Image (cartoon, rainbow, N blue to C red):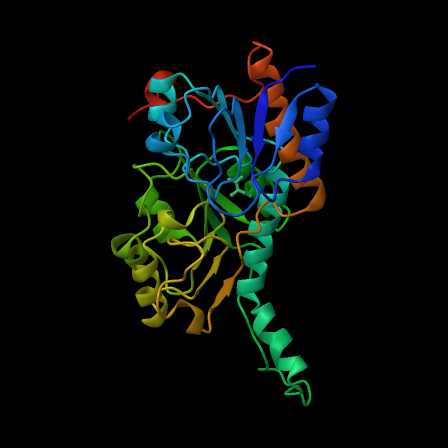
Length: 311
Ligand code: DGY
């Protein structure tokens, strides 16, 4: 039985605790929602809402691994972790389908204004069918521009082909150039990680390139879009609508966003299915088990410089 101290953030599903326990690792949860005390911790199973910055890492000299229960790691200072010799892991693959499903759900919801029509019926406003009632945008056969050709972007492309959509893919080094994709797409869905390169990837200039009938979907990270510019573009009718699962200053919304009639908003639900969340928790815990046993991580995240990627 190891005495390694594993800190598990509040809210992590119990599936993680079962994995740790089976490996003989002792774990504890912080008593409250405040940033947990890492003193003496060898591993931290954290959430994307935990800010893992240099100061936190420097204040935890015994820490060997930060296992983030998310595929995105923008909440972790990867450079500091690399400098201090702290391993970092994430949870790719297991949430690909759930997130791609939500992106398609948002796309359909915006195109056909489903939440708005649900409210309309509940309010008793439906007094009879007419040919012009609630008409929306076509999806089948339209052009979908996918920004970011990683696992989730490709999974969205697969779903879109089921709707006979023409798919344009843009990635950092290949595919359709971003400007061309924005100009040609009826729907644009974002699937890039948040990095210094992708912060405000979609700003006023990019929104101005989009078609007036176009819809923007974001299930990636909020700061990929300049949310103030988006509010202006939606107000001005520069684009037709947006479906957002993530926000620039989450959980706060840019002023005016919630009042717009042509947006559908979700509270960061991309991976929110029971099975997916359990699998994320399990993978995070299994990375901790491997790390503390001195074995390679299952899903390591390396600092970009270490990984040899473009800075
Ligand atoms: C992630 O894993 O990065 C998602 O945003 C959480 O679902």
